[in-house]
Structure formats: C-alpha cells, structure tokens
Length: 261
Image (cartoon, rainbow, N blue to C red):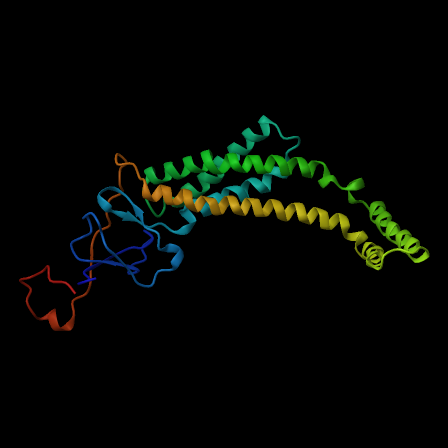
C-alpha cells in the first residue's frame, strides 16, 4: 500500500488500529483501506461524501437490527387475539420502541442521523411489512392450534395409537403386500407424538421464513452503503492519530514533521 501514516477507530467506539490508511488521504476521494486484524463481519465500510467511509459494528447494521426488532415483536405477538388492523398498529408501535432501544445505543458510539434515518426507513418499508405477512398467517395457524385434531390432547394421542393397533390386527389377519406391514407399528410408536411433530414442523417452517427475511436485509444494507444521498450530512472525520516516533528518528530531523512511517 505504500507508507502507512495514521490509524482511525474501526468501530467509532475508541478501538484503534484495525484500519490503517495512507498518510494524507483521510479526506480524499477513492480512499484506500488496509485491513489488518478486523473480523470478517466488520469489513464493511459505510461510504459518505467525497469517498469518506464509516464502519459501524454489526449490531447497528440492518440485518441485526431487523433481527432485534423481529425478536422483540415475536415476544409480544402471541399475546394478541384475532389478527386485525389494531394488532398491526400495536406491533408497529412495538417496532418503534425496539428501534428506539437500538438508536439510544447507536447514539453513544456515533452521530450519523442520515444513516440511521435510512436504516429506520428500510425497517418499516421492507422488513416490517414482510414480517406482518408471515406473522398474520402463522398467528392464524396458532389460533387454530395448527389444525390438530382435538388440539392434540391426550385422547387424540390415544386414538392415534389405537388406530395403529387396529391396523396391525387387520394386516395380521388378511393378505396384504409386505411393504404395508411396518406402517401400523410406526403409527403405534409415533402416534402419541404426532401432534408434537406437526406443531414442530409449522414452528420450524415459520422460523426459517423469518431467518430468510433477516438474510435478505443484507442486500438492503448494501444499498444503504452504496447509495448514500449526496445532500446527506456526513459525520466529522476522526482526528488523525500519529504513530509514536521510531528510535532512529527520535533524535533526528524535527524540521520535517510530515515524514511518517
């Protein structure tokens, strides 16, 4: 990269050293970064005016912020009754509370209202509507107890096992294809657990869909980074942090202060 002359915080939280840039290019377009010992998940700079970049911790990026909001909403959604416009309005208000919780912590490490406004807009225009679509379907399914016969109570489990026993007797007394013989025994063994298996299937399917929604926010985050509005204010650039002089230059020429290693 050429000579290295200064270091800036990688996460705007006081941690120095992970990013080093060529001396004198802090405020120049086309800035060149040298990644040294940063985690892969943190190697995503945010670009502002004139090629200036900002790097924030992953917890302040759209995928993890979306995950935080969805987790917040999922803790409250089962307490609502029939899904309607009022339920969506209350969940919308809960989403704003979840974002306010993250925004308070974000303000402790950075002052970038433009970035946060665009992130918040993405949450409410992309993530929350898609969540409502998924949650509405799953909420109705939960209200119907996943379509289980008798809600999966004890009597239904006994009935499933009884059906398996009857089928085993019928197969033993009649001539049926050999491939049918294991089916009654499987029903006898798994019958008591059929309601739990059905409920687990629907829950895992719902969780997978929410996880897909969070992963899709990675693309939306890339849009936030790549297309920052030109009229958006950029936070001030951190002050340059000069490196300590080497022993060879400690007693040497003080007349050339810009000579850096």
